[in-house]
Length: 165
Figure 1: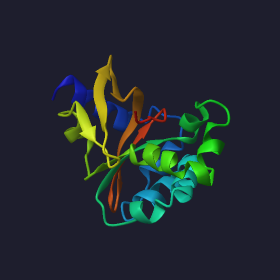
Figure 2: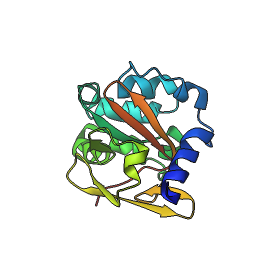
Figure 3: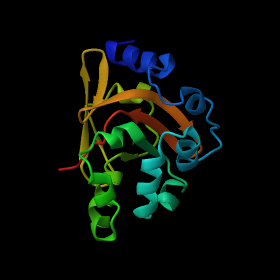
Figure 4: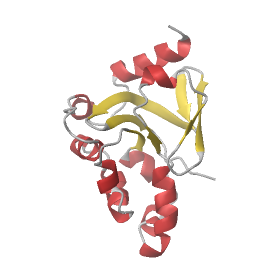
C-alpha cells in the first residue's frame, strides 16, 4: 500500500470531518446518491443546486457515478451571493457546468483514485487529483471522507466547491 492509499483509507475511516459523520457512515447503500447525500443532512445546498439544475433525476438514475460532494460549509466558502446568483434561472448553464464538474462517470472508489492523477468529469473537463502532504486533493479541494457507497455509485466528500475553467 502506498502513501496515497494509506491517506485515503485513513480519511475514510477516521471520520476527520465535522459533518454528521454518523449519518454518512450509516448511509444505506440501497439509497441512490441523491438520497444518500440528503440523508446525511450536510448537503442541503448541493441538493438545492441539483434541483435547480434539473440534475436530481440523472443522479438518481442507474449510473454508476462518482460524486465529489461539497458540503454546505464548502458552499459557504464561496463569495457572498454566489450560490444565490447561480440558482437563478438565467445562470442554469453555469450552474450545470459546475455541478457536472463534480461528477465522474463510473464508480471510482478510493483504492482506484490512488492510481489517478486526473479524472474526466461528465461536463467534459478533467479534475486534477494529487497529494498535498497527507491530504488527497481534487482540484485544490481536500477530500475529507471517501467511499460513501450508494446504490448507483460512490460519494467522496470535499471541503470546497471546485470550478471548471
